[in-house]
Length: 110
Image (cartoon, rainbow, N blue to C red; front, top):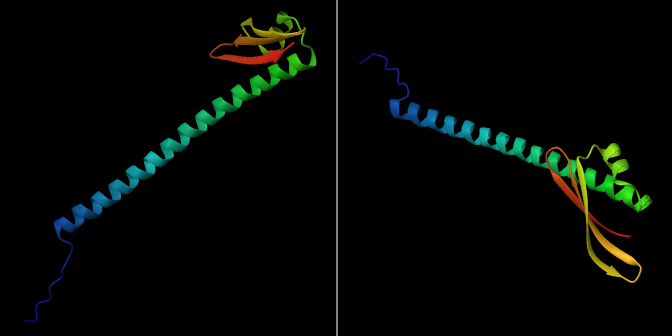
């Protein structure tokens, strides 16, 4: 019995190893996909926050600013104002701004 036996991997071991590798790649792919989705949502949130801050800055610096001026500065399609409440000489006003793809609103006191 001097014959040399070369023992290799069984078919079951190879299938299990390939299954583990494919599951690992699938999990990594899902992780990357979720990361990309969260980056997109983060960018949308940053853009909306930036627009709100810009609008609020304009209205705080000059509460009686004309609508056409705001439209020109921030590239807004439509502006609407709604009076929410009033107290003595002050009015609480909700201002809706419609741009190409979203609606942003701020609340100010004039």
